[in-house]
Image (cartoon, rainbow, N blue to C red; front, top):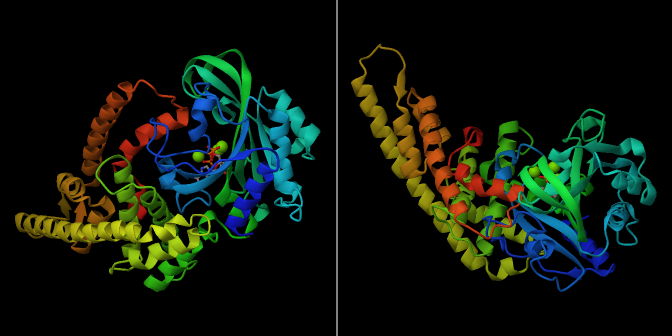
Length: 481
Ligand code: ATP
Ligand code: MG
Ligand code: MG
Ligand code: MG
């Protein structure tokens, strides 16, 4: 089943159950406390917290999301994209747990002829919060799920709140068993790569106070208006239904892997590291496409920096695949064609989107060229200063740091190019300098955050806020990509 078909079935299903179909909000988060929209409920935050009265009791959407927090997972796990789409159904003081569970079960396991997904119920598992007996009983009452496939989790995994006094409540998550060839028996508790999390149901029912941490808060009462907030990962369901191994191989993403294969002359599936690179390229090119499409432009801070990094990492991964020529003109149109069924505006805006992306690739190519000159000079100097036969040559961490800081040179590139000239790099010193810089940036971000009064800050959002700062640094991931 094509991704666009799953999306359509989703919206039809909930529309038939009296949900208002609300178009996706922009990736530029409507909530000021995050850079990007990270979940389907973000546009509905004012309704959930009671700050505004919702125009409908029930709503559904397919929300464009970006989670930079997941960037290190991309291409390595089967299921984390920097860009993805979250299908959501929401109740604002209307239906609650029983219907949320019933709808989810019906949509997943109901027959395809009737517009559902027709998933084999024997593949599904659920988790419930340890004190939420009501949810456990409802799973048994309104679905065929046997008790043996309901697992219990604590606050860390199955409780949601904003990180501030206000609404909160338990969650119940649905997992899909890919089968014994993907890992150990035992449900999601045992193996989250075999049992893929596909859908999170949040039951917002309590008023919380003294919120100190994810698992440290006090329940002070019941909410008069209880809310439902759910999120189903569209790409995850698509990959499971399309019989492929991961979300980068679905119809909306895979064509870019094919294009990267063609450009590089390498075969997908032949080498693990190359496969990761191709998946990173396919993911990042798509994210860049969608982010530029929503009006972000490359820059050295905030969203623009995230975009810049995504584009640079794509180009860099292509280089590691052996492609020295410009790559984006062969990749971006492919991603656009794969996405335009769901986002027709990409076609109309493509001239502008591609102009932005191609200019950034050109700029990075110049950066690479300039950085190369600096590196070569530093290596020659080092060689001249070191008498022959005195052991291995080591380039100082400060040179690597300068290359990174001034020219945006990823450390792995410095390492690789130095190695080609028989020189090692003091990576430890480089990492220390990076950490110092990161600590400074984090302090700045915290200062900014405290200056921001109206923060409906969710815990994950708060994490996301500090993340772009870490994002400034090249993390371990760059060592392989
Ligand atoms: P995971 O534990 O796999 O990282 P999560 O618990 O962080 O997922 P939620 O915040 O519960 O995810 O989001 C709701 C749903 O959105 C998930 O059940 C999943 O299907 C999907 N989802 C979350 N993050 C991603 C991602 N990075 N790429 C693709 N789908 C995602
Ligand atoms: Mg996650
Ligand atoms: Mg999870
Ligand atoms: Mg979850």
